[in-house]
Image (cartoon, rainbow, N blue to C red; front, side):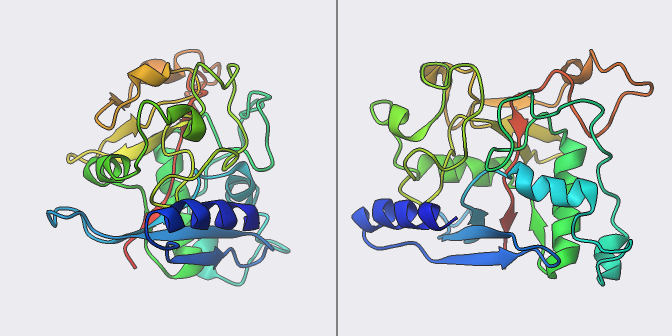
Length: 248
């Protein structure tokens, strides 16, 4: 995470100063999640927000799934231990792309929400998925252009058909990594349903836009051999991940 901070500070510094950051420890582990404070939008429609610097990593997702924050069946946090956690994947959910330091993939909307609920219980802060409006605002203020896309985003042109380690390209003007490309990120539509935004490693750079969105679809789990099909994992969604935000 330290290298992420340096890169983010350099990019943000060029825009007028390093971003305000904080690190959220995950109790019971040695891991933490780094957040950047992003000011509200100029028109006031989007409030100030703490945004995870990277997409959610397998390192953090594994703690939730495999209960690595617990010892002898408890972590000392009754609220977190009572949370419904995603079940273990029935196969290698990382698709062989990479695990430690890589974004979690094949994640369903339900799984992303469950992680947020667990993290909220662990920390006492309300972590959640961004809304479509919040995600679009971040995108519009990222400073990424068509000409600079290759410096900030893993897309069809440079990803070689797989996800890449989070934060391995340049941070954007907000101090965030991989806002475009690598994995599509779950957001919440006005009606509460899930939408994937941001483009992924399979998308051509020219097709990625702030308004591009994919609504949750049952076809993304059509080949799941389990019965009933998993509500946590997408057998046909290797580009589906998420990033968490917080209002506090």
